[in-house]
Amino acid sequence: MEDLISNYQTGIFNESKITLTAEPNIYYKGDKLALTSLIYNLLENAEKYSEKNAQISVSLNISNNTIELSANIVTGK
Image (tube, rainbow, N blue to C red; front, side, top):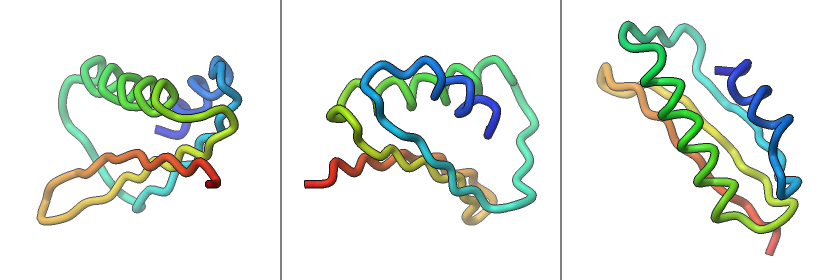
């Protein structure tokens, strides 16, 4: 996950900053390409709908055996 965000951050156009908060030891067994596509889609939408220099906070948590991936946009206003 950190590698995906780092790779995406290098190509970001609106100068937003992305941070990741993740619980340790979260494992996913499934289609890696589909998960990668989902994460990039989440990041692209966060960038698209944020203002220049926004802070995009991505979190990865587990609750009731369900993995939760979310993005918050902080504009500083």
